[in-house]
Every structure is written in structure tokens, then in C-alpha cells.
Amino acid sequence: METQFDESFKARLAAEGDAAIKALRERAFAAFTDKGFPSLKDEDWKYTNVSPIAKETWKTATAGIELEHEDAGIRAHELLERFKYDRNGLTALNLAMAEIAVIKIAKDTVVDEPIELNFAAAEGTAIFPHVVVIAESGSKATIVESYSSEARSFTNAAVQMLVEDNASLKHYRVQKDSPEAFNYGVTEVTLGKGSFDSTNINLGGAISRHDIELKFTAEGGEAWVDGLYMLDGEQHSDTHSTIDHAVPNCISHQTYKGVLNGRSRGVFNGKVFVRENASGTDAQQQNKNLLLSNDARVDTKPQLEIFNDDVKCSHGATVGQLEDEEMFYLLTRGLPETLARNLLTYGFAEEVINKIEIEAIKSDLDATVLNRLHAEI
Amino acid sequence: MLLEVKDLHAGIEGKEILKGLNLQVRKGEVHAIMGPNGSGKSTLSKVLAGHPNYEVMSGEVLYDGKDLLEMEPDQRARDGVFMAFQYPVEVPGVSNSQFLRLAYNEKMKHLGEEELDPLEFNDYLKEKAKIVEMDPQFFKRSVNEGFSGGEKKRNEILQMAVIEPKLAILDETDSGLDIDALRIVAEGVNKLRSEENAIILVTHYQRLLNYIQPDFVHVLAGGKIVKEGGKELALELEEKGYDWVKGATN
Image 1 (cartoon, chains in turn purple, blue):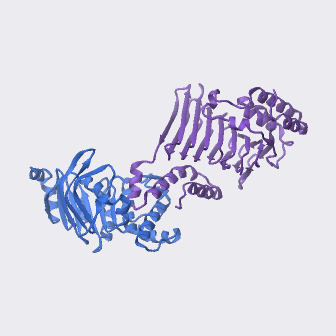
Image 2 (cartoon, each protein chain N blue to C red):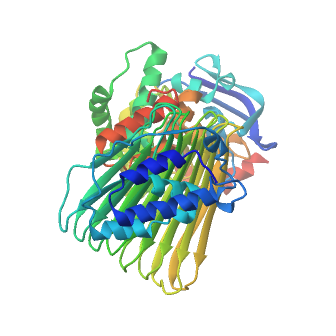
Image 3 (tube, chains in turn purple, red):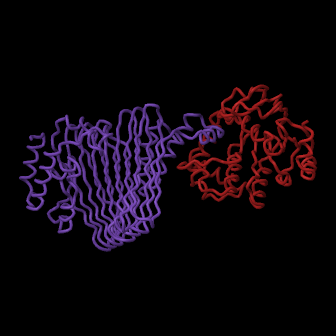
């Protein structure tokens, strides 16, 4: 079957100098040709309709990653080989077209400055960044992945992260695309006996979806996978997360919050697997949503699948409006109703934003949230 | 007259709790409203503050000559009515200093006076915090979140110190406090007491009144004030128990 990406794929393939990766691209493109874009019939995509993206004609552009993958090394190759490109047509398309960059944080190295990856697709273009991060044992670093397309465009990104024993990786993913843009991103994390702390902010995009999947591969790993989606107008944002406790004695914490206004729609699907041998697992997951308008909607589905008895797990989801008692409290302190509402909404979002340790990102998000609320606080 | 409650009938979910309450409060006065559980103490506080779940069936409340019941809760607050909550509400994600500055500035705006920027306000807040011996580390923390019972009550009095209300209603401020916290809270209130404001202490127990001496004591039972007197009435009540006044309702 012909696809709109056939020509640009040929060009990409011709430019590929690495035989193994070339073969990988071909397999991935075959998978894309076979699967096409995800459809609502697919259980995992039943709330997110990507046909508006499929219908449009996109010009493939460069994501502008300066890093080269030629020196990727054997583990980067292994990671790329392991990438689940066949999870859907979009991930297949990403790998086929991938603009690959490899970031390696060497053993026992502490990188103080955050490593920043900024992506912005120009109007009418599609970009396919694919970043591989290897945090070697004992290393410490912060990755900031941000998206800021200013017009109708299509970003299809993938980030694979390997966190080795005693390594500590912080990850911020900030999606602030224009409300016209389309953004799909997948994050795959393999975590050894180290720590991974991820904060995912979704503010932009007409249709955006983020799939984040974390697998523990050694005892003693600890992960935080938190997020905020704040939507307005006709925006649609979907987060699918999977935390796989494949080994014993690991801890996962997850807090996702949604603030939905206008006619926006949010989707949260959070799976936590505790495998048969994974005793001593501690897995907490919660998803809280605030609906600010009658026309906003959220579909939330936390799922726990536990195959071991010796575990501590909790999960929950809430969808609601602002608490009346909180409102009354602020009113009795003289705050006018609109300000009181805005302050509570800001506070709700701030619980996630407050986690961010990079002041520039935090204050930028503060300002964005306040701007969304048309408030000065 | 700062506050005049005339034959107030009010309640919640259609159930009448206050059944003809009368009360007069002048500037410079401290009134204690005492009563057993279910007598209507909390209903009175909530009605005065304007809680939306409480309804007024009949009667009148004049505040500074204005119809208080016609005013929205936030208008009442900006006009100088303050209620310290029995169970202060936690506001996650909003820092105490942010919250207090907004409350302070709303009042200043209302009075046509100058608002304070965060730096100026911080200095102002530091001074006020001394009144309740509150550590400035509480400024950055989310409002009441993770505060102990005593810290929450101190925070209520800090808010009162910042906002400087004309009429402060302290709803069971002594409940859940150990003796040290009670002393700090009471001393804070005493420092805020002035000729320019009035305080209504709503309490079940007499012990708060050992620290804050009221000018008047009103005993509430069955939704009405059944006995009134000076501070000695509280002691008498402590001695004889509420059964003594309950008899007076019938």
C-alpha cells in the first residue's frame, strides 16, 4: 500500500549509513505500511481519534537534533532494537523515519546542567525525533524534553531511556505546542537499581498523546512518573502509562492531574503490572481531574494487575469540581469568587508543577497556568 | 452598634436550628457564646460568615447598619467580618504567603488603599507572625496542608492579624488545642483585641475564657440565648454544667 511517507522514507533510508539501523528502519516502515495510523477500533485508541492527522499531507522536516548516532555504541543499538515500534503505526513510523540522537552519561558522572532537547515543527511539517538516553551506573543527570511547535504541524517523537544501577535520572517533558498542532510521543524507560523521576506536562496541541512505559529490571529501583494536563477549547490530550514491576522490591509513585476547561477532553489510562515474582512491590497511582466547564470531559482508567500477594499497591481516580468548602474558605478571606476559583485551580495544578526543580521551567509554567486562568496571583 | 442580630431563625437542610436569636455587639467588646453540642453555636458562626449551605428563615442581621444577610461571603469579609474556622481548610498548592497577600490586598483594594507587592508583604507578614509565634517557614508551605491542629488554629489567628477585621468570630478556636497552643492562640487574640474591633468567641468550654476575658457571656441552648451575664457566668456554667441552663429553655 502506498503511504504519504513513501518518498521521504526512501530519502531517509538512502541517507542511512548504519546497516543494522537501516534494516531496522525497513522493518519499521513495513509495519507502518501494514498498520497505518491507529483507529478508534483499536482498544488502546478508542478515545483518541487521530484521523485528522492521517488526513493531512505532511512534509517531512528535520527535528534539528545536533547529536549524531554513529558513535551510538553497542548499547544504543541494543536499545533501538528493543524499541517496541510495532506497538502501533505511529511508533513504527517514528522508528522508520527517526532522527536518532544518543545521549550517554558516563559512569559515575554528575551532569549539573540540565540536558535540553527542544523540538518545534514548522507549519505543515512532520518531525520524527528519536532520542536514546543511557545513564550509566552511578551517573546523575536531568533531561529536559520540550515541545513548542507554533503552528499546525505533526510531531512524532520517541525517547528511550536506560537507567543503570545507582544512576539517578530526572526527566521533564513539557509539551507546549500550539493548540493547532498534533503531538504524539512515546517514552520507554528501563530502570535498574537506580532512580527515575519524571514530570510530564501537557498544555498544548489540538490532539496530543503521550505513551510512557517504565520497566523495572533490578531490585531496589524507585520511580516517580507524574504529570499534568491542562486543556481548554477543543483540545484533546491522552496519556497512557504502563509501569511494569517485573522484579521484586521496587517502588513506583504516580500522580497525574488534569484541569479541563471549555470543550476539552482528557484521557488517562494507567496500567500497573506486578508480576508473579515481584514481591515487596510498592506501587501507588492516582489520577485527579478538575472539570472547570460542563462541556469538558475526562475518561480515566487506572488499572492494577497484581500477580503477587506480598505487595503494597493503591490506585484511584477522581473527577470533580472545586471543593465547596475550599471555595467558602477563600471567600471568607475576602477573595472574590473568580479569584478564589482561579487560586484553587492554580493550587491544584501547582501540586505537580511545584515538583519541578528547574526554576526557569517552573516559573514559565506558573506563568502559563496563570495566563490560562486569565489571572494574576 | 457593630452587630445586631434580631430574632434570627436559621438552619440547614430545612431544619431550623436557631430559633429566635438576639445579640448586640459593640466595638471594643468581647462576647463569648457558650453552649452545649447541638445548641446552634456553629450555625450562628456559619450564618454570620455566609456559608451557602445554611439558610435564614427569618429575622435580621445588621452589621455596621447594613443588612449583612444580603451580602456575599467575600463582601462581608472585605467589609471586616472574619470567621476563624473550627476546622480550617487545607488548600494544596497555594502557599500561605500567597494566600495571605491576596486576602490582604483585596481588603486594601476595597478600602482604596495601597496594595503590597510580595517583598513588602513579606515584611508585614513577618511582623504579624510574631503575634502567634509562627515560624516564617510556614509562609512557604501550602495553606494548612500538613499542619498540626494547633498550627492550623494559629494560622487562623495569623490571618486575623493580617486582615485586621472589625468583627472576628472565633468558632471553637480552642478545640483540639493542647495547653501551650491554647495559650499562644489566646495571647494572640488578646494582642489583636482593641477599641476598634469586636470579637465573638464561640466555645463549648470555659477554659478559653481563662485566657481571653469576655465582657459578656451568652449561653445558647435550643437555638436561643437562654442566659446572659458577665464573665462570672462562664465560671458558674463550668461549675453547674449545661444541664443547669437546659432547664431554662423549657
